[in-house]
Image: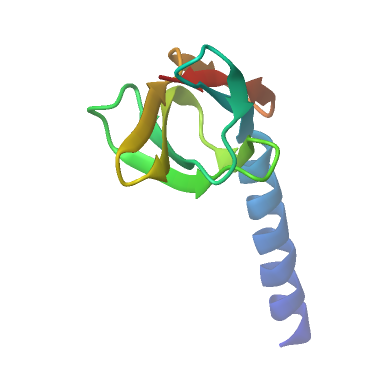
Length: 116
C-alpha cells in the first residue's frame, strides 16, 4: 500500500510542476494623469485581466499596491488585455486599457499602462 501512495504522490508532484512551467506572470505600473497634466501612481486601482480583449472572459482581478504596481501570477498561454479603474472620489474616475499582449511559456510579461 505504501508503494502505491508514494507513486501517486510522485505523479501528482510531477503533474503540477509540469503545468506550472507553461504559466506566465503579468505585472506593470499603472499611472493616471490629473487635470493639470501631472502623472501620479495609481495606488489601489482595480485591475482586471481579460482574455483576448475587454469583451472576453475575465481571467482574474487584483489591485495595485501603494506604488501603482500590480502582479498577476500563473497565467496560461494566450492573448490578454488588462483593464484598470481608479476612483479618486465620487466624481473623479480614471479608466484605461493596456495594449494586447501574449503569454507564452513561463515568462514575466510587462504590461504597464496609463489611466485617463
